[in-house]
Length: 394
Image 1 (tube, rainbow, N blue to C red):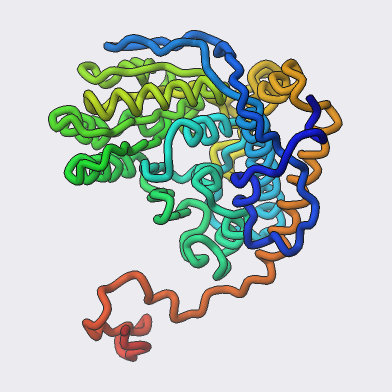
Image 2 (cartoon, helix red, strand yellow):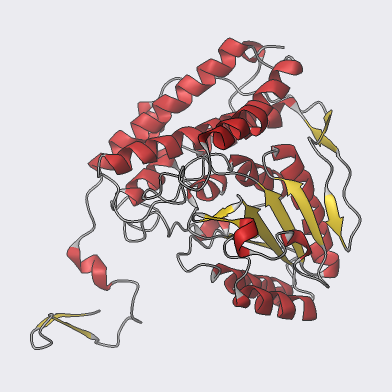
């Protein structure tokens, strides 16, 4: 069945750009068909101290088409951010997620917004997966008031409390103890939800990670530690930094699972399994075998420590967007042209969001002093010479 014969647009796709609805009149329908389809994951799961979940994943036309649209949007968003950075409209640090989109969409498909997510500084797509809008993304990247952190956080500090997305953290590995703290609050409150604490292979050797994992295991906290292993910590290959790069086994006494992080359905299956495990038995580690196409950050060309052939090889064989495209076509859920049309619409949505973000004003200078001190203490702000009082904070 072709997309043009299918029903109304999914609420998920519409929610991605709700503030821009007035400027966009075109919406290609996303299937509402939920007829079950069973798909086998690309490779088997590898387990440590637990039984691996089944490779057979249940999905449906609506989910597959939503996966395609969401990942195509994330991909285009990150490519646009690259261009804005080179045009000097984005300043400071900027870490792009293109190549790793399957982790964001697969994880969201397995959980609810009541579950918590906390991650490091490669956070743009995770924020969008939690329901953040393109306007909020580009406004924050360009330091504008309409940004998700009011233009004060920038690329590394996205945040969406109403969807239990707690950032966006610039200190390597420091988000993991915070995530375990969120899991402690969930257990204390008996609310039957879990926390996903994401970190990279470069952070996997941090001592604070093992300390947090130890107390999480001791107290059976519903914490799921997700190592997004893109195989390079900045410019250092995993084998040069870790004696044991089997990160899913690093917990020793804590169960672990290695997952193909370029396969959105495998990620969904693993996260569903991990949530059920964590609620019953405490923490578990998921190692997502993934890959980033850009360098570590915008100052890294990404080609001095790996070959262009390696990058193009991953694109050709494991690209997460292309995998879903092939699934959609093989099950006759859409035509090639209809998928191309979706990509054109996504490009327009991104361009419109950028245009609106550019119109958003910069934060007022007084915003420097907000969200820093407790209100009502009469704290004073001095100039650089420490003599002149510049402001008395509310």
